[in-house]
Image (cartoon, rainbow over all chains, first blue to last red; front, side):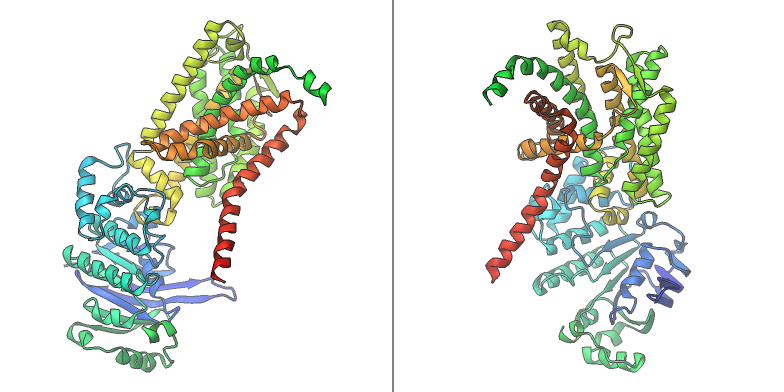
Length: 267
Length: 317
């Protein structure tokens, strides 16, 4: 059976040859089994989001290979990788088209990976399907399908984006701090929806988070990153029994620095 | 003062209005093109100034070469499309910033148009050719005038229907998504580069079509006829939105109504233009006036937001 994802010694340097040179990914390697739900933590600039962007193809990597379900996608442009990937971003504005209706946004996502033609952009059958899917969110959005997404709250938008990411089952779901911009209550709800969707569709997922408790509670595997590579990888029972203080200690032990991030300490 | 007012003759204004309305309809096609790039694709496309003259030049030369005016007009659509596609390729394939890419196309079209026409101006007379549109149809008998306006309205409604349906297709939705949020579009597997090229092609096709109609309407193609066309197009879009925007957005098929509003904006622009000329405003200052009006209306939403932010801050204190 193929691995859901293989990253083979990925390197990425930003602003090469300038004073702002920054090694973002430094020989990053990881393998994900199908159905893995990996939470990713690490300090600022550790390479968490950079890893997700490398997989999504926002820019090309300097070296290494990205293999999704046996297919090497390293050289594919961003829009061609979309076939394999569902993505939800930190900024709720990023994942949806604000000036378009909820149903139109979902119709766009429903065509992910398909050639777009002069057929109708949204059919009646699809509308029924979207209504049914939206009702599972329990946010009352199924009655507001022609509302412009821009009028929704951040939490609602993230919920819709999650649903969109799963409409066409992706090989890999990438969640990039998708609850960081939400208030705690909404964040909890969106996380609950994330769990629900990942379980229901048996998705392989990666979730970057700043919240250590969330990282421990959610998923079956946890990785910690520092300076562009993975410094700690734990799964199963061992992960479940982790505490925030264990993670802090681990970080100091491996990286030799304090986990100096207020957001993480407070959460 | 009295002398000024007594020198104004309302009948000349009223007589001139049908011509302005017709000109507004012809330029309304260009305004739709500008609406598509500026509002839907979110791309400030200055190709327009060149592609309207290109459409006109191609059309006039083809008609003079004996091609049926209808066919020549349709070929001008394609000529405009090529101009738009070039701008699109300059920005997507070669990475030239959009606005600069469009200026490069525009400036190169100036030379191209001179080559197409062989000189800077080429007339095409309704006496010699069965033109699709002409000012003479309006100034002629009532019958030809009615026929002209009826035909023009049917054509514009047809155009709106085609565009409305097109933007409801999968490709149309991809264009709207690309304009609204290119990151999201790419995440949904949309090739935003291809979409940009395609949209610029379609928009400039409309501009070329508008140029073809305008050259026949006015009886000549001129290499300078596109100077400031983008600003007139923007003025039409803005006037349409300001006056009919609320009305259009509340309706079913709001997008179709918005396009109709843009065409009305163009008609109103030319009616006001006529009015201002009639009031003896110096004609050499018209472009300045247009630019000021467009700048003011583009600034309004920004200034409104800024002042509401200030008020919000004041409340918190």
